[in-house]
Amino acid sequence: MKKPITKRDFVSLKSYTNAELAKLLDNAYRLKNAKNRITDDLKGKTIGLIFQKPSNRTRVSFEVGIHQLGGNCIYLGPEEINLGKRETTSDVAQTLSRYLDGIVARTFSHKDVVELAKFATVPVINGLTDLSHPCQAMADMLTIREHLGALKGIQLTYIGDGNNVCHSLMIISAKLGVNITIAYPKGYAPLDIVVKAAQELALETGTKITLTTNPIEAIKKANVIYADTWVSMGQEKEAKKRLKIFNDYQINKKMVAYADKNYVFMHCLPAHRGQEVTEEIIDGSHSVIFDQAENRLHAQKAILLYLLGKENIK
Ligand code: CP
Ligand code: NVA
Image (cartoon, rainbow, N blue to C red; front, side, top):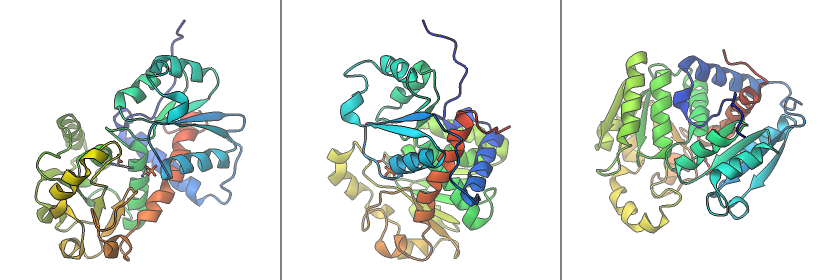
């Protein structure tokens, strides 16, 4: 029998208030700057990491974060769980809830993470789906705040494919007051449903959201330039076509000349030098990509501590 569930998940940024997200970022900043990063807050707790796709940052930052907090984790790769194929996602969720205290899941279909969250009696964290990447967006906001001293009023320009990373950036920007412009080739716009949600949220915070197919217009006066791969995991067969279509959307020296002179360059990684960004930009002095990668650790520790009842975000 299914018991009533009183738990929260971190599947979608939309289900967190603006104030809650801001508090999570404050907590992440405090954890980053704590004298001692090793605690026993998650002592005796075990988190399962379900991955249907490869990962460097997400897997390692969660594993290290959980260990730093005194907990244990179990990596469950595509072969072990085989979500929805070996057994139903709801059976996986209910079984794992009898062993684990939390689940991190990286899936292709967003519905799989939603389904896991629905049937699990323990908190579920979205570790990237085809639709969104909320943990990345949290780390990105932490990075922007550290480098530019604020979020409200900052101009973030994302150039590339309007998919998962872009979607989460749009939602979090709308919620936290970061003006965001997305430039994409025709046919690769962010999903309407996400654009509409972001626009509604932006009305509340007075944030500007701009969509364009013109990358040069988009980058003008940008404080943050953001790139992601042109070929996301699962799209490998489209690589040749995509590389051609996205060709004019490369972040290079000519392009960044239009941005604010103190711009920062961001990329969720993994990156492809010579495709979405040139080597001189990603490895140049404006690039903050490894701070972003590091901040995954701190942002996720804050999320874990909240979901496992160790910290308040009110
Ligand atoms: N940015 C990010 O999620 O990286 P991984 O795919 O390596 O986890
Ligand atoms: N858009 C990329 C992000 C990787 C972190 C992908 O889905 O592969």
